[in-house]
Structures are given as C-alpha cells and as structure tokens.
Amino acid sequence: MLKKVAHNTDYQYISGIISHIKTTAMHDLKTNFDKFYGLTKEVLQEYLLEDGNIQHYRNKPKMCDQEIIALSLCCEAMSIDSENFFWSKLRKDYSKDFPHLVHLTRFNARRKRLSSYIQRFNELLSASMQQGENVYLVDSMPMPVCKLAREKRMKVCCQQFETAPDKGYSAVNGQYYLGYKLHLVITINGVFHSMDLSKASMHDLHYLGDVKHSGLNNCLLLADKGYLSSEKQIDLFTSVGIELKTPMRSNQKDFHRYPFVFSKSRKRVETLFSQLCDQMMIKRNYAKTFEGLSARVISKVAAVTALQNMNLKNGRKLNHIKHALSAA
Image 1 (tube, rainbow, N blue to C red):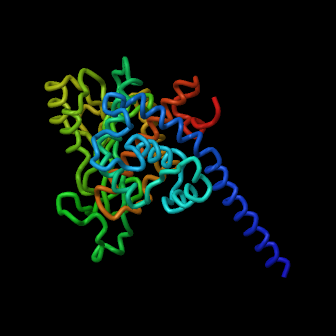
Image 2 (cartoon, rainbow, N blue to C red):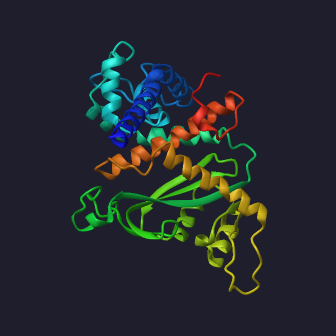
Image 3 (cartoon, helix red, strand yellow):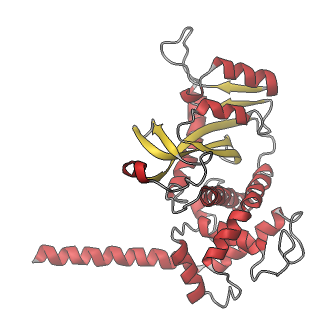
C-alpha cells in the first residue's frame, strides 16, 4: 500500500514538472516572437514589401509573410514539439497578441512555400557571423522518418521517387534506419554555412561534390573517416582550393595520427548535432511530405543560427543557445 502511494506521489510530482515546463515555455511567447519578428525584418529587408509580405497577393492574407517566418522560427527556438498544442495555446491565451492568426493548415502550407526564404534568412544571417573564417567542419547525421518495422507499408514522404526516403545504415547507432541524411558544413565556431538532405543510402563522399559548389574556397575542411578519398581531396584542392583533412585508417600506407587539435575541433559539429536533436528535436518527424519535412528542418537550423546571433549581440557565449531568449 505504501509503495502504491509513493508511486502515485512520484507520478503527480513528475506531471507537475512537465506542466510547469510547458507553462514556462509559453510564458514569454509574445516577447520572443517580437525578437524574431525584428530579426526577420532586419535580415530580409531587401525581400520584404511595405506590408510585410514577400510577394503581392490578390487577396491580402490576415498574416503577412514576415509573421509566418518569425512565428515558425519562434516555435522551433522555444522547443515546442506539438504544433497543435502551440496553435491552441495561441488561440486561447494569446488571442489579443495574435488577432489575425490563420488556421494551422494554412500556416503550414505558407511555411512550405516560404521555406526558400527561411533558407535565405539562414544564409544571410550566418554569413554576417562568418567573417574571417577559414576552417570549416563537415559531417552528416541520420534523419529517420519512421520505424524500420514499417518499411513495407511506409507512405511518409513517398509522393515522388526522387525525394522518397530509403534504408541506410547509421554507424553511430550501429543499425539500419528508414529516412534521410542531413549534411551540414559549419565554421569551427559552430556557425552554419551550408546544408542538404539526401537519401539515407547516399555515401558521405558524394556530398563533397555539393561542397565544391557551396561557395567554400581556399580554406581547411575537417572531416571524419567517412570522407576519406584521395581522389576527392585532390579534386577539391585543385578546383576550389579546399584542403580536406580526414583521419587515416591504421592499415594505410604511410599512416600517421590525426592531429589532436583537429580531433578536438571536430567535437563542435557533434555538439551542434546534439543541440539539434535535444533542443530542436530534429529527429521527431510529424510531416507527411518531403516538402513539409524539409521546411521543418530548415526552420530548426535557421532557429539555431538566430539564437547564436542573439547571443553574439548580447555578449554571451555563441553556442549557449538555451539561454539566448532570456533577458539581456
């Protein structure tokens, strides 16, 4: 009997903590939204019209494009996982702050349509924080879309063969998964440079072809053993001046150890992946189409860049993004 009472007490205590976290996360929503709204206006000013839209609409929408982008970034930055919970909270507790709130379905449709501008926002903002950088990191992480047991009946993101997910192997987890790979190139300080989503079966080496056309040149690029290829190293160096450095395999001829400073620097990209998984919950997929999935991934990565920029302006450590929305 005592054990049962203790169990119920623990359950109530944990439920209270979860409720408190949700309440706290939503407490300063309007204040946080205003921060992203101002940042969006600052970065995308050359694309925005006077009414806050990026394009002319025959029938003017209730929410402008700038508000859609800012609300998308705010939702991701505040680690709000459920869009239904987020939208119901806006309608119930923030109806005065957001009097022209559109339907959630309409919001998602417009966010998908504006994903290229969210990507542009990310590129412009990160470029302003990359001045003088000449060392970059490249790596990939698995992006599962459903459980492996559903392989035969999976319909998620399968509308087109070119963008449909497939089976790949995750060396980190030591198991196969269904989905995609997220490829990222960042500075040694953790600032975004370029990204791409590929099928899970694509080898990391193939992404180096995209890196060659990403705008990187005359720099040092640090990678892991998955990018080990003398042919790719020579191609990158001769074409765009990128010096690719990867660890050697122990059975290779003229083997020498990977410099400790390179190994230590590469931990930055692993930390960023951890932040994307933990704070941004990037591996939780609720999208049914590839366009919806890519829009959410772009929004999450852009939200990290925005939080880094806020830390930079407020004199905080760049990558302490959990504290970026606190008062300056």
